[in-house]
Length: 470
Image 1 (cartoon, rainbow, N blue to C red):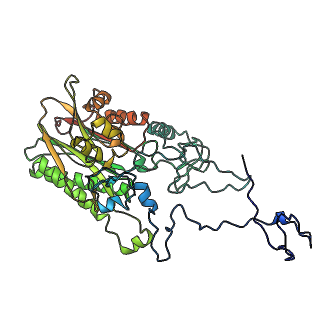
Image 2: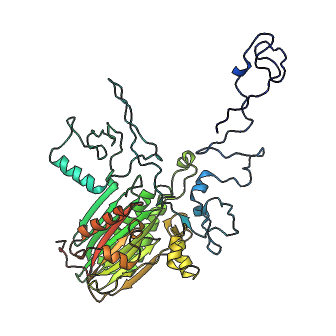
Image 3: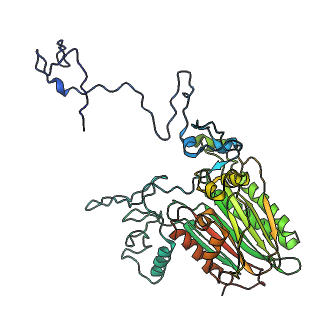
């Protein structure tokens, strides 16, 4: 039931200052309508909810229990026994149980959907149209367009099927013209950016990366390539990086890491460096590249004092004629899928994550750990605020041909077990890697596309130079 606000008691008439009695509705001297007097405001301070200063005590210190907005968004309590990197954990949250925060853990909220999915419309006057709506950085009213729709529209554009006004067709309303800053002049929808959907095929390997259906930008990156060893035998490689969304500039971090790692491998392998050693050095080079992003001028910090260091995860694979090497830091993964589907597939990496630590310690089984909300809290990453760099590398000598799936959690969230991944990898993925990568990205999008999705397919053994997909 709705209630009217209570009117404050008045001792004098606001018009003539004549004394009043309790319950008077009109002034007895001048007839002033006392019900027209606005109620007195509550005596309480105004607190900002976002991007504001914290309430402070008279001595300038925040009150007990106050947590800044950035810390509320990223801090997650974790069980005792797991150390926390000071830069990654932020201000500790006072949790109900006496559990210590996770140690050296970075909480990455990459799987959280945006709050709205309906389109935003703007009204247009009869003569002079308003400028199109420009969403704020945290306001992304439309889902990312399905890359299959974008490809269809690109085909239409190539055939000359354009709006009468000319220019690019909007992927959302399919009728408006896209202006020079990338927004539709009719519905105001931001058009896909270059990194929203990326595909590349280099010789016998291929990779596809997509923004997904919920994120406003693609924070993944990849690099693929092939070279020759000193004896002339072929070597192929793939690097996949996933930006940590709770960090500053995660897209820049993943791009810098993937580029540095691939360049290091392509330089070291032809010189005769063992592939496993070359992978270790590539991860170190990627770490330096990401660390350098944090070296900003002091003036940049003045305008954004709450920024933290850029960060990302990395997983890579090098394939030669008889050797398979993987390296990783974080929770991006590599899988082995044999061409003979009667043989068992395998996961080649172990996550640097809270869930993996719980399983390794015997505190939870895998199903329980990955069902926990803290499962994707990573305990290893590339970035200036990482506690220490621990590159993981492993080498294998498969006894049969197959394909290596190198991917971010945007894919393996929808095919976590090796057997699940093997079921969704097309049987001809080794000879049609680009088609196979597209199928895997489509599987993640069909499953919900809550995260950026990136996958590279590397056939084993490495085919001779010049061999490509059929």
